[in-house]
Image (cartoon, rainbow, N blue to C red; front, top):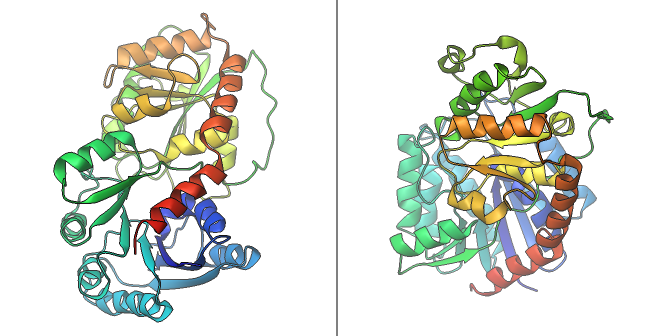
Length: 371
């Protein structure tokens, strides 16, 4: 049985939970989970204690490694060396990093880990504006100039990878569904209720929240039978406030959203809106698919890969708030749109395309290709 060290930063735990559980049945697995713990960062989608319990229940060999230092602090070298030592002590045949943005860990890995037996999960081959700090750029540069094997999450990213790094090898396995459990309160919706359009996640500029707000302003001139829920941590929501024409149509939750609260937001939603102007893969989409919530998204290459327009969701020209408003209006007035049928279509699509067993087989194939 192949030994695999699987390293997850806390920011991607929702990606890794079902994958690690599935792989643990077929390989000798060590799961290392890294947490940034400080006074300024005491919020976690999953806490160290929750990961301990998840590992115990699923019989996963697991280590939490906590770091109390900021990314720029040289004291992170000691933390990085601890991770490397745990990996070396386990002596795996393959090492899988679910991405990382730590320049010290990246640099130390360059010298201490075998580049031919290490796979790096690349969620963004090119960093998004607003999520491209100096230290992220430095980490990314070291990673891309060190290792040989990479894991990308969409066909569009694979094409970009091949164009930029023709001498390196990338494996394509998409994101799996993100399941945060059952909602605490089940809601029985009626046809007369307002349509709830959800924008979920941190409001980085590339996510195009202003497109949704402009569309909502147009829409409110024609109907008031809808609500815009915005849920996710915002560092500077003031940049959007002057675009809001009617505060009454908004339900704002601009704080960190815990894993326990995520199911309720999606349970309340009728559609999730993803008006991104850039996308490589999309966590909120995988949450929506898990909870059978249809999607309205900009017509970027990745969304075209995973959304069947008019059947399980809608696509609109990126940046075009007029077209987005028209789609939302047609949903509200049921203009040739059967929401129940769309949800049924989505359920069938998810069962066909997001079978965990098939995902685990793809991961095992990737891991067996590296030695």
